[in-house]
Amino acid sequence: MTRRTFTTACAASLAALRQRAEAFYAGPRPNIKWCVSSFLWTSTQWQDTGTLPYTEMLDVIRDTGFNGYRFTGWPGILGRIGMDLPQLERELSKRDIRIATLSFGGPADEPARHAEIEKSARAACQFLNRFGATELVTFSPRRPNKVLVREHLRRACEFYNRLGDICAEYGIRTGMHNHSQGQLVETQDEIEMLLAWTDPKKFHWCPDTVHLYMANCDILGLFRKYAHRLIFFDLVDAKYEYQKDDLPLANGKVEKAGSQNGTFMLSNRNYGDGEVDLQGIMRLIKRVKYKGWINIDHHHARVSPQNSFTRCMSYIRTKLDPIYS
Image 1: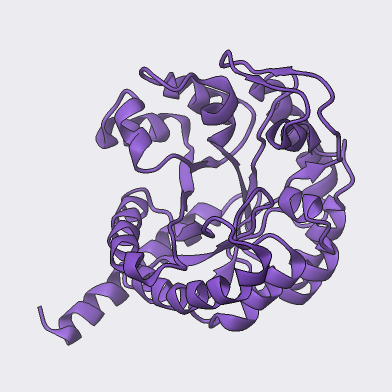
Image 2 (image 1 turned 90 degrees about the vertical axis):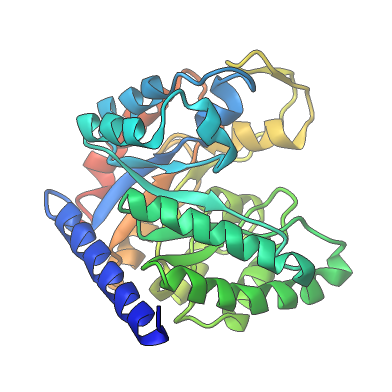
């Protein structure tokens, strides 16, 4: 295949994906679709071995009124969902829900690993193409000592521009998901450095508000400044709660008292129960005419996923939809 033929094929693929996306956004919410993350199930609801009751999760997503979900655990979890990809497509179609994106990562700060990550990114993009998704959410590498963050971030940003080019070959956009639990991009200054050191035409922003909250970021300030770079984001309410006691999980595990993971889980809140200005964020994304997915990435459900997402959808319909309908 010549370069010209390849470029033409990529352009045709991109156009087809955009047409599918435009058709998907026609409806009662012409700009926004709401999804949840499957991480809630993989982290707290399901055991680490055996076939996953995947259709039960899909039923909860459908029954609570969401349009889709972020696929987590890719690619390893594909062997545990109890169905092949054609079967998964059929199950999604029956429920009229979609895979919105998937969580992707790798040691982008290690040049010797870049070829490996590029290969993985191409496979991820092919997976997303199959399910009609047009965004890839990228997580940063593990966190080095603070004095080395700038150098590791510089190396990663050089790669992220390349990653943007690779994704664009498949009609996919990618951007950074900040994380407050031991990853390279955590704090406000690190987020702003990454956005300054990457090409806005190639690499975008996929923030998570609970992680912004836990890192003590100026959430509204960041959205006000960088909302134009949004392609996908996690809108999660939060209120800090230190884990004083052991926390039993539905999968049989127990988070021991005083753990960072348990404290983070307890600090995740249903919409309206926390301190994140959800309505303020909606007003800001309306100003830039954001069009895309908004994701709820719960890590812990105090009662059940069904209860949490039902409550959140009620808040969406009564408080957020009127702002950006």
